[in-house]
Length: 406
Image (cartoon, rainbow, N blue to C red):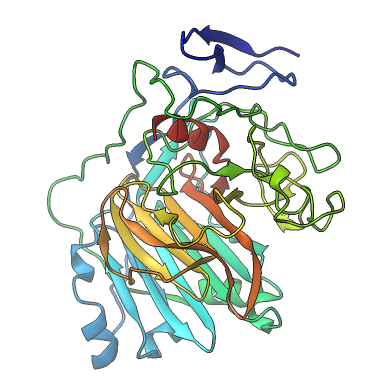
C-alpha cells in the first residue's frame, strides 16, 4: 500500500516527508505538515425551514437568561427541563448557540448550528430527523437535524457512577423535549464563516526532531484507524501552548491498561514519532472509525510526565466558550467546529467568554472530575459534517499540520 509523498530537503537536518494525498498506508513516518492541496473542511451556511408555530412562553427568570436569543438566526431549541434552572447560561451567535446548566456534578448543554463543514471526500446530504445518540467516557450525547439546522445535547458527569451518563436515554429524552424559545428570521442572508487556509509554502519546523506516523497507523493490536489525510480543521493553532508534546496512546503505550509493563511516566512515552489514537479500541461510539467505536479524540502528553505548570491548553481559533465542566472545556469556534479539551485544571475561562487564537484556557493536568487520570490533554473536534448532524471527526492530520506551524 502506497502513500503519495514528496520530500522537502533541509540542509540543517535530515530530510522529512509529508503526505500530498493519501492513497493507502505503509509504515513510513512523516515529519512535517500535510500539503496545502490535501482535502480540507469547508464551512457553509445551511438554509432554514422555519417552524410554523411560534416560540413558547418562558418564565421571567428564563427570559432574562435568554437575552439576545432573537439575534441568533436559527430556531433556538432548549429542552423544557433546562428552562427551570437558575444556572442556565445562553451563549448566542448569529449562526450558532449553546445553552447550558450545572446540575449535581454534571453539565448539560444543547448546541445548535447553521454551519456545516463539507469535505470533498464525502459530499452526501441527509435530511433525516432521526435522533442519533452515543456514549462517551463519563458522558453521553444525542444529535438531530431539524429545520435544516443541527442540534446536539451533551451531558458530562464528574462521577463515574452517575446514572444519567450510563446510557444515552437521558440525553435522548432531553432532545425529544426541546421547545422553540426564539430565533431571529430577519436581516440579510448570513455569509459563510471563514477559516484560515493552509499555507501555500510548508514552513521549516522549529522542532528538528519531530516525526509523525501516518494518520490511522495505530499501535499493533490497538485497533483499526482512519486512513485519511483530510484536514477537517484547516488553519487551526495547535491546542497546547508550546512544544514539545507527544501525541500517543495513554492506554496502549508503556504503563497503560493494555500496554507493556512499566509506568505511564516512562521516558519512552515522551519521544517522537507521534502515533494516531483516534480509533484505538475503546467501547465509545465513534462513527467515523472503521469498527464504529473508538476514542472520539486523541491524547496529547505534555513535555514531561507532570508538566510543572507551564503547558496550557489554548484556543485553536477565535470563538466562544460554551461549556466549563468539572474536567472539560468546550470552545465553539467561529468556523463552526466545536473543540473539546479534557483534563485541564486552573481553568481561566467561563461560559460566554469570547476567546482569541492562542489564549490560555487551563493547565494540562490529570483532572478527571471526581477522579484522576494520567497527565495529558484529550482533544476532540466535533462538526456538523456535510450537514448531517454533529459527529467526532479525526483530528490527527489537522494537528500534525498545526504542530509544524507552531
